[in-house]
Length: 159
Image 1: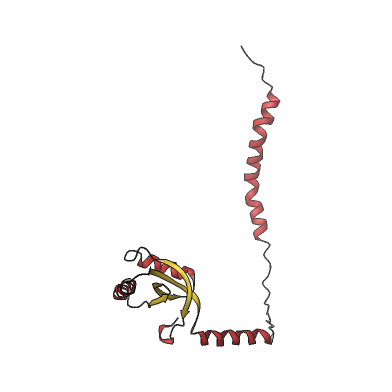
Image 2: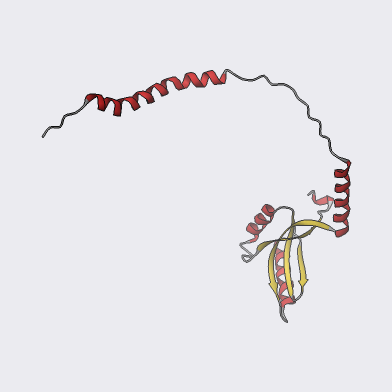
């Protein structure tokens, strides 16, 4: 059984979208060329930053506080936490093992009652701490990043 086909309907349905695409493809290079020729000239500018004397005062107060405290907020990687009779010796063993494998990274034995903890590194950002955790994970797989007060790097270290 043959069905009647409306040629106009077929042309509108299939031909018009194809013609639109073809027309768009043909005109696209001209549109891109027209936009690229409209470059704005570069004008030299200057910016003046005005800040209150209170900002300098607050920065000086923060510096004095941090120097008095002996450090600033940062991150470390915690390798051990334990309580009990043998926890101090276990913490010392973990710290010594770490320092033997990574002598350039500072390691700290911390007592927060009733736990002994071993934390390593003096890192300013969480990304740096995550990188250290990744670097030492083959040897110390249970480490995790913690926020802590870190010591200032000495000028010889270049941090």
